[in-house]
Length: 95
Image 1 (cartoon, rainbow, N blue to C red):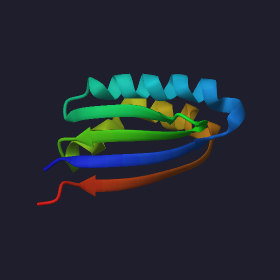
Image 2 (tube, rainbow, N blue to C red):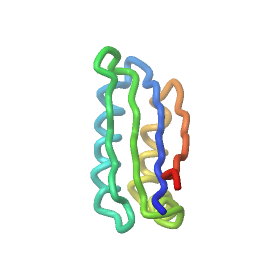
Image 3 (cartoon, rainbow, N blue to C red):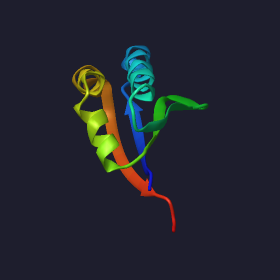
């Protein structure tokens, strides 16, 4: 059963361009990982500081492998400090 992650992000206004570059790089790297089915970086059309990451993995093991990867570690180190807030919510498909 697949694992879905929704990450709601608020970027500090002065960091939007820098954060978006790093988020898009992380997403591109994740899409190449085995077990990552989908990774989307979505922007609120009325507020460029409001972002949602929508990620789908084969399972928890695939997500954990993503988190252990170099691209994710770089993203956390470089991109997360640019944020005002970040909230994660996991989903699973209804049976």
